[in-house]
Image (cartoon, rainbow, N blue to C red; front, top):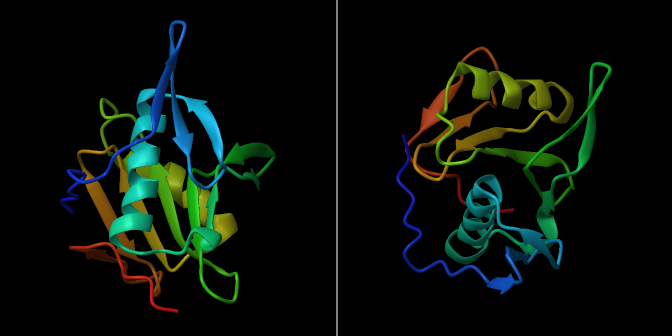
Length: 147
């Protein structure tokens, strides 16, 4: 499991009437601050500010077709050739990271085909190097972006 330090990460939050929203720096819009969105925004800011992943290489909640179903991945980071490099699946903190979560990520992976996978509920964080699908390696850190 990977420990992430969100101490220096500050979300842009605003309250309007009875709703709390958060600003997404990738999509450049305000979104309802659900528990899953809260985790997604911390992860986004962490990979941008701490790991220095380029904003221009990050896609958020894009549609993909999985079998006959229309799904949306949480985050994909692309390499300089615009090939998918890191697939990130975010869950609300009260949702445990289980085989079910992994299978959801793997269903997206079957269409996107990333070198790395990352699962997080903001508390439990797991990252795998999937370069060799026959020998998945669980990592102690998120990979650095160096393309």
